Image (cartoon, rainbow over all chains, first blue to last red; front, side):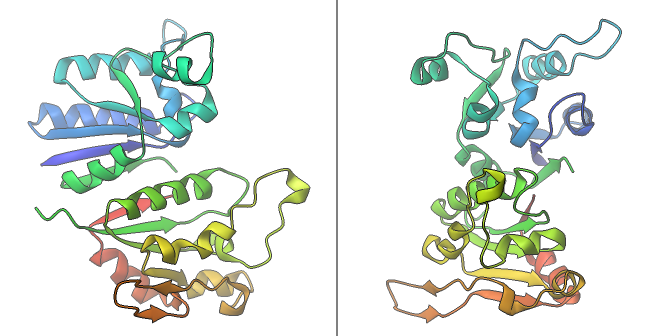
Length: 130
Length: 135
């Protein structure tokens, strides 16, 4: 089956991103396909490489990056949600005159059309959040 | 697979207090541009999103409620409101905004696409949807 995943909550505060990660990993290991993971609302905060959890805790951001590397996952952060919450890549920094970037490896910033396209192209859109 | 799906946006939260309602509306506007069959459903505190006379001056937030009234222009054809959720909050259809819809090609029009439905119908409508976006 072809899945897409939507993550609506930030890391650590809420289990949504952990659950989405576990679900996506399990689905891929079972041979299913993941068309896209889309990060929305505070979910965009999963896409900053500046996250530094204590060493004995899981690193949620790195988990996503590593999963993306292994399975060539498309991790998309919503641009409008990202601008509100300070998630920045090179393009956004230049466009909005910011002096730094923080996007994590394998994440990319794009528009809500990517979420709609994922819903159209996938057999199931699975949403994680409250 | 057909490229046109029945999208249902399930709105469950009050318009202010969290950003879910506002960012949900942003997805609705984009989905309509992709020429999908877009419907909205309002349940629980989500029914407050459609109430008339919202005034956000006191909380320093943008009042985005006028946007709901324009959804007919974005090809949104149905806006359903859960009757039980309305009643539990002491509201009736008269407390809600009206949203006009018109097909500018056929000139077919509907004065108000906001429709109050019972719980069985809510379940049916969700069942009939290809994709449910839950906010």
